[in-house]
Length: 306
Image (cartoon, rainbow, N blue to C red; front, side):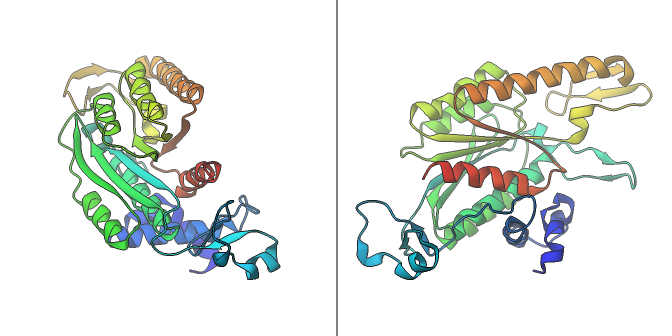
């Protein structure tokens, strides 16, 4: 991949046009790694594949003296069966995640929140794979739909991609109930990555996220919204239909726009504040956000755990 073109592979719309999910993940991660060596991430590094940092008690026969001689950093040679970190990708596949707004210039659909979540999940899994971390997958709506235990093998990665490709949104939202159900299945300390729009009662969601903390897990949240959900829209009177309940209201956007924005910002600020209060990493993304923001947030979280 030429360094001059890496940015386009971090663009969700560009990635959506590639042939399959594995190719999407590969291009996103390769573009991201190229970008790590360029502004604005100059100086940020992450060690991939064959090495991990030396820890007291490690067998010195695996100590890499060549690396130490060049960098004065202490690393142990890593073997394929070793695992650095155990992670779970938890993806909301409820109907609200199917929403996508319209591109005004050409009147075509942008990618949905669920598509964005799928590309992001595949990219995170690919990044974990090349670091030889174990990654698992859970999808949920009103309850748990898919559960794939963590593994660091290529076969597991391909099974994860197959599960993502089969995602269908047919049910309404049950985030808190689902997260509590999944928390009971996570038996070993892990990094929990939750990807959702989080359109549910805030106190219930926070309580469910804290359930993971009670079991000594680390949690990182990616809240995905469509850009239109942040700003609302202008125009003549329209019929607004709830994507999950099919409830309808008829109104002028200008009448409710200000109130909508104020309430949404209050909700987002409260959610972020509650997450930070309980040591949960919070990240707000839109379906037009470059993937490097999310991947960098994950790597920063990962580095804190070692």
